[in-house]
Length: 344
Image (tube, rainbow, N blue to C red; front, side, top):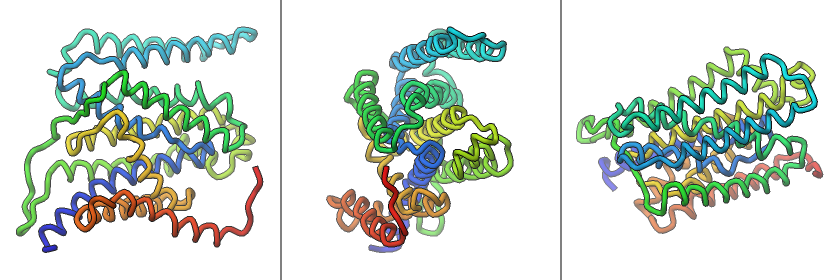
């Protein structure tokens, strides 16, 4: 292996590692706030990538009708849950806001020729279609089980993942999809060429991580989510709604997952069932962080990306085995470090 090959592999490793770092932070955030291992996180990645690909190729979107069905069910449940109580003005406004949002999204998708829109507008539209599914997913499948045992939540999470894979097959078909790159230029440093798309991925991931850090450190809502992650009972006593915390973390996870899909879609071809393996590598990073430390999880995810890239050179057939075997020593170390085990 010469320097140029090592630089190319390192470039690929950092690019993939940046995406895995975002996903590991999402997994960690959702787990610490809600005790849910978000197995369907990878589906947000594939739905984002394949929706963007469908928009660019001019294929008819079916995802908008899935969003419409889910939002109508969500609105119907909101109305039904308050059938015996007086509905406040704020609650009426929230229901009207959801209906208006759905109407605007359907108007845009049915009126404009989406393939002729600028790439930034296509990306924003993709986010508008995917992100609302996060809080709706929490509302429909996890909110009624918020106080259930972690094993029950894990089983439900797996079931939602399986259902979303099937829905992905129905919506996008078995063919894979990829999108146009944000930029085709190459940056040359000495004898090393760096793809501009890789820089887009790395710097976008850094921007999102810094934005999350700022949001959690400087904003009231971010501090409320941190409080819910540290001590859920204490957060409830301080008036922080667990429903709000759950919906907000799922919305953030959906946003990060969809943004990750948009970023990597120009680099690799994604299929309807590609999301699970991608999110599993983010999960390895979260395990390295002990499902508790955000910086270590992000660092571990980048290491996973680098090991995966260099494994492709030395033993491409075993790269997945090498990456997932990383979990074993950290699990052993964590089990030796743990002082006690709680029975559920």
